[in-house]
Length: 165
Image (tube, rainbow, N blue to C red; front, side, top):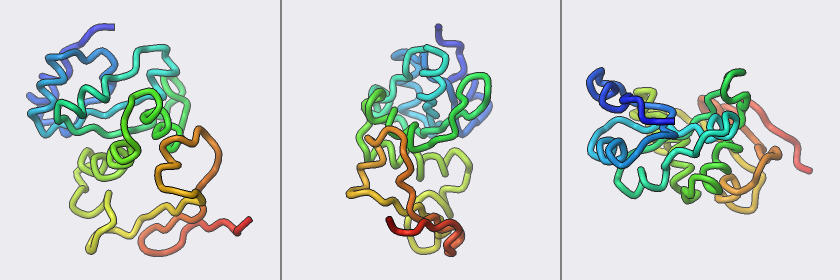
């Protein structure tokens, strides 16, 4: 697997993001670090396709913004579990729990062009929140599989709730 030149093309096209960075080398990392293009990391896809994991730690250390996604599709990542992707980010990509959480929330919102109204808990932002049945928020980054979702709040209203055990 080699770099395909997608990063310069993303800049040329004024893209918000570039995905599948498994083959990104030092030049691509340096270019992303000085841009506002977000590198979308897809560790479930890399795992499923037996490709190298993307250079997440190098990207973050260089100053690049990264987002995490499942890349859910039957061809390269038949996985819709964002918590699993967070766990892969922490264990395989060497992101801290805080970096993985930011990559799934505020940085992902930037990719969608909606960072002014979603992706963080703040006044004026959509009240979309997932409450976990976990001893600590960092649990999400290390718990491999399992259902720790207790309640989902969408648009300020409880959308899904689970009875206490």
